[in-house]
Length: 205
Image 1 (cartoon, helix red, strand yellow):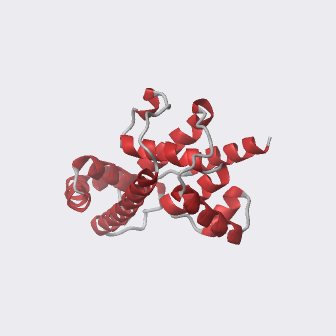
Image 2: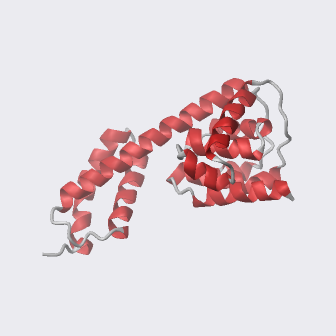
Image 3: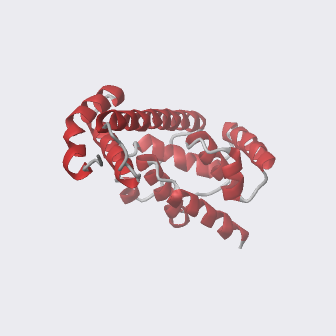
C-alpha cells in the first residue's frame, strides 16, 4: 500500500525534533534539520516506503551528521584564519552581517580575502570548508586536479604569512560573501559556486 505523506509523515515531527535536539544540542538547528529531512522526503520518490518512521529517522541522522561535520569545518576555518589575521574593523557594510553567521566567521572570510587570490580562495573554501572532491573543484575552477592540490598547499602557506596581498573591494566582494554565508546556513552550494566562477571570470577581464 502506498503511503499518504500528506496525512502521516508530519505525525513524526515531535519525535524527529527530540532526536535532532539531542544530536545537535539546540532547538533552532534541530528545527532546521527536521525541515531539511522533510524536504528530502518530498523531493524523493517515497511512494514505495513501507515504514515511514525508520526512514525519516535514518534521513534525519544523516542530515544531523552532515551538519555536524559542516559545523566543525566552519569552526576550524574560523580558528585557522583568525589566528593568522590581525584584528581590525571590517569594511563590509553592517547590513551584510545581519544573518545567523557568527561575526567572527565574517571576519575570517574577510581576512582570507586579503591574503588569497580568487583561485586560491575558491580551492581553499571548496576543499577545506565544504569538503568538495578535487575532481569537482577542478571542474569548477577550470584547473587540473593536481594543480588544485598545489593551489591548496600554496593557499595554506599564504594564510600563514603576515602580508596582506589584496584590498577588499566591498562592492565586488558582496556577491561571493553573501553566497558563502548562504552556503554556510543551508548547505546549498550552487550560488557560491556561481559567484566564485564569476569572480574568476572577472579577474581574467
